[in-house]
Amino acid sequence: MSTIDLVPAPQPFSEFEAAERARGCTEVLARSYEPETLIPEHTHEFTARALVIQGEMWLTQNGTTQHLKPGDRFEVLRGTPHVEKYGPQGATYWVARSE
Image 1 (tube, rainbow, N blue to C red):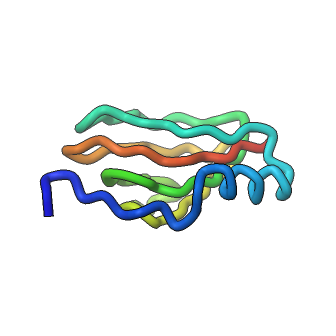
Image 2: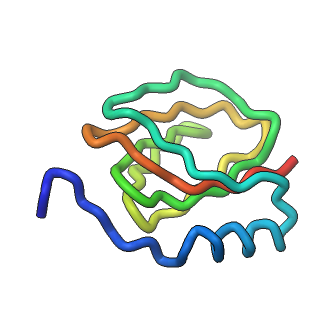
């Protein structure tokens, strides 16, 4: 494998978006982060459900760290303090936000 491991998306973005909007999400988008980015502890005024598409990341919330790779899903509930760290190739994920 190359230095960037790409896994085919389990579904097209349009299907991810349609499914999340059917669940009541108000915003669905793709987010990408540069290699080795660290976002210190913070919260959001929305709940986020996401699907990792490329790269890897570590998400720490409630004292637990998840190592996420392409095909993995995660959720961060509104107001939950969390830390995001992105791997040596950065990361891209699709995220659905709801209030």
